[in-house]
Image (cartoon, rainbow, N blue to C red; front, top):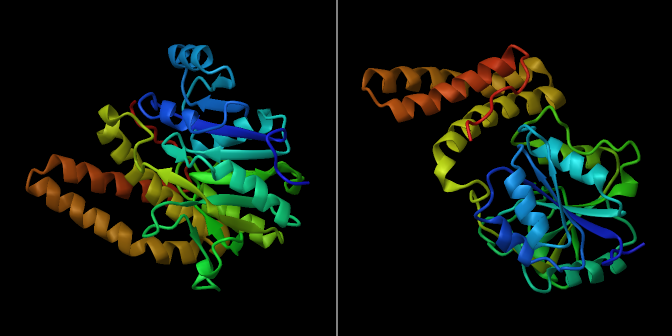
Length: 289
């Protein structure tokens, strides 16, 4: 079965995304159901969305569960066969969804597909086997991985309903998803005629940029260790992150000695994320937003 306006839902996971969400929603066809999963208890945000957009349902998680967990809530809540999960700082080109509908007719089957990012210097996909994927810009092409800010999921190819690994609070949950899809014989496609614009780093209100930066450094380190541990084992993962661990310790001490509080905090966050991962602790750190 191909994708159409009757069997597709949109899922957007948000946290303090009031300043970007409108652009994202307005770029989506009004006939499509949109599920916004807000990682807080922000009733004012929920009321605003559901009052201003008749096709939007907002689910409040009551606390910050993370990106992957938020996506899973939206996917499982949806009633359609296909679900397109996107960040709130994504804007779709006018013809993006129509191009996806057309491309899905050409594909016999797929597990994941995505439009292509408009910024060709920073592609939202990777493929280890084929270097020049864009020889024919009219056809979807298979890749190994797509970025987590734009993933369209064919639910029937997830028979176990095991979508995003909720152990990952932030970072590499999409790498893990794509890897599992490939390991299970699934397929991932890019639709080059469908374009999206990624505002990048704009998903959370700039007022909380410092807290977000601290959180990113903690979770990038935690996720890096645990992703490698999941697929390559504890000791290989430890070897991979050991230089980062040493660097974070040295730089924390240096910036402490020269009274650079901001830099010291950043490298301490990296150290803390790694140590917690190595000790087998869950991804517990949450930004204060």
